Image: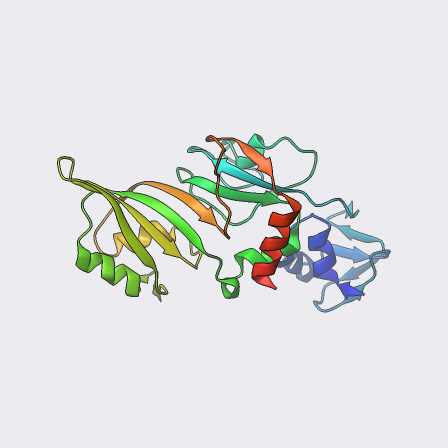
Length: 237
């Protein structure tokens, strides 16, 4: 037997965190009975309905996308903006693992594996992420070291990071910086630079959990290999 929220997540309906909210809100029926408390265990053979939808186990799919600018990381958008889901051809109900800003590009995973999604985005997993940022001016060494030690954003001090200046353009007074972090706060990279007086002009994520978009043009995607999926699970278990 498994916890109800885990079974819902594994069905591909949503992440475990979202499943827990649906249970608390009384949106889940097990064999016709409403369940509104967490911790209830069920069998995979049980009849489970979420928001009136009967769950069925489906094959898990895993994609890596080289996210282009101008797409939001959501399954749908009330403002009818383009979403990353629009770029993937699949009949499965997939969703992005975490988020990249509207104009941030690079590595993005999409899957219907709610369990893996929840593990990868949980703070305790400390998944490594590497970004390339173009700043509006040349980064001073003292400011670089300040960011590496941690800065205050939204009342929270970021954990240690690693930075490397990749390129300096003295004529245009800007630079390209690589930043390596193990957190995933909202707009974190941009806010870290803003905390010491810099604006991020462009931002590209070049690595997430050991995966890159090597060989993929902007907007292109591919399925993860079995080996890659196993490697992702090995990072969080």
